[in-house]
Image 1 (cartoon, rainbow, N blue to C red):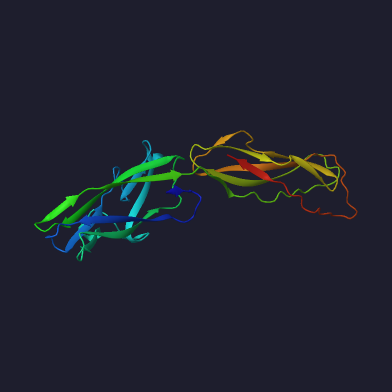
Image 2 (image 1 turned 30 degrees about the horizontal axis):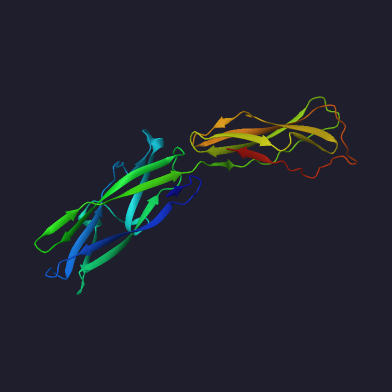
Length: 253
């Protein structure tokens, strides 16, 4: 399974398990069975299963298994949560039965970017005629948590208010927030650190231009702008408003 922390929806998957059976010519033509799944090698509180890669909560990825649909009909370790059915051989000596099961990983988990693994053990209990027989096959679980960075709060507009030849600078700023996977390093840059509007030269600077490391939570920054004092500018009326000038903020990770 591939997991993206920025996806607002749960990560769901559909899988299948096939039971292959054989019988002798004198054996019954049907065999009842149940199939259950345990909580894996790393059962976790609040979730039936947990894939891991190291210690600590940032290295543990909870997931659940279901019989009916993602989020419905848990597939677990009790009679009430077993698959149950009957294999019908008819006149044949081999038969099979297939069940579809589902997985779900909750949205918005705050985990390290790495591959998490687990092993689930199933218990197949079937009627072999004289009595019940148990078999314990396993299947592996792999969850790849992808590194991601996003603007959790995009920057807004920077609006300067300036009077010709004013003594001090005019300043303005806008806030934004970046959310990156735990441990993911990233940098931020503007496509230009200045420009001219109404013949007034302005400058822009990031509050934290150095490289950053993601925490899994939004990290807050600002873009600070300034127009130096003493500039005339161009304005034929009492108040002039320039057309907007776009700048691009790039987050690289």
